[in-house]
Length: 147
Image 1 (spheres, rainbow, N blue to C red):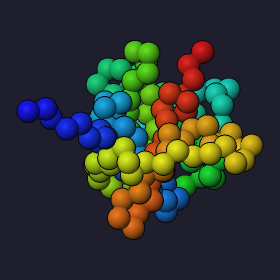
Image 2: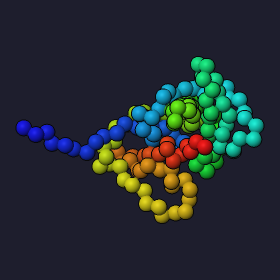
Image 3: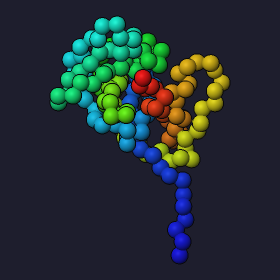
Image 4: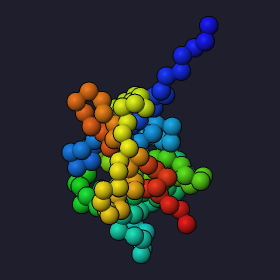
């Protein structure tokens, strides 16, 4: 008897930023940390908040709300740094709050059409629809370009 192949499912870490829900593929995330002491880096771009020393590793920290041109948010006790690796380099995003891990089947993820010249649309992998929720799924490979 043959097994019937259905659409794959993906797990995303869901977080809030400016009262909106976003998601990042859980397989790309290394760890999630409380807000740490951040050391500023002279002449870094506006979105780069600085660097942190996490268990002996220096990690660049990006204020995701600035990167997506959403303005600046005020840190709270719920503020977290989501840390991931791209090309063996660790990078962290500051987000307002990590909410949950959510499984979203492929058929519930819609592509985003390029209906605007807004650069931030390039960063979007798709829109996840789960019941009455809409979650913007971010594409880390487009968000972080290491040069």
